[in-house]
Length: 421
Image 1: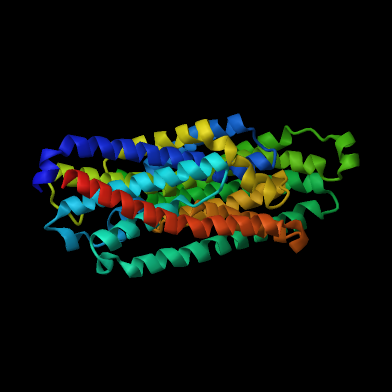
Image 2: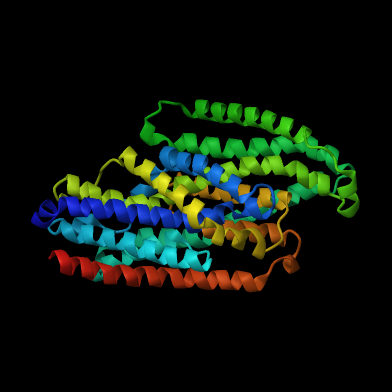
């Protein structure tokens, strides 16, 4: 404890710097993947993606980011195992942040879509095994997280597949697809708004201490969904039919009508991503700052400071704006060809899965879910519509990420321990 008291300002500064570095990496890699479907489908530009992320990634981190930060902060390892040596937890969380940030920067520079959740969870486990002991790891929680890495992309793929099939049945394959797009388009906008608002009200806003009953939550989600559906209807009706384009591609005008809807789903995905992935950067940072403020006492319960969530949201946005362009194309263009209807299905499928996971405190990989959703949409047109070579390369990069994060964290842990001890 004397070490923490003696070097408290140094540890505090390192926590803030490493935390910002990590959230910058999340923005450069994971946010680019999250927005890739919207950009790849041609619905929005890269500049528009950055603006949407600036608003909704930040909002998701601030309003609904509290639950998952608890899992990263306290759920992966047992802090009680080092209650007599809290500096070990401090070194470990700093090591986890720095190792994850280094790997994300390297991957983003190369344009590799990797999982920040894999990286930070692997880093925390890596330092815990070498610094505390294997028994300190909550292997039950790790098992739940690992299972989510398999289940969540499948779920995202299933939702994306079902949405794509429904669009093809009710709109694209109808006798009058343009008429059906105007009729059913607002419903798809309502669906996106209702899902995100409902799950956010149920669990994501609990740290704001809003006293709202379950019935009121459903009511508010429905009201906001209807309002946004009305806005969507106005935007869809303003889209003009392009007869010339329709001669070359029969569904060109229908695809144009889905572009306004992609704006809503892009906002939903950005909010969902911010609510889940801010935890990867600010969870370990909050653990370090909590230790410093308590004078070295390893507390089982502590509140997430609002300023940390705000800083995490800001770091994510800066990362996307500065380096996100290098990995934006991977999910948006290389797995399967995306159009606005396909991009809508993939994005809403991914957003629904991410928000449901984050409000249940499960730190899932947005990259995995986005890939699963895009794959599901591609499979709706048959296996030949998917570039399996790209898919295999992406999976290999995922497998490399976790051991790299663990190994770097173990190395940095021993360096920090040697410097300050």
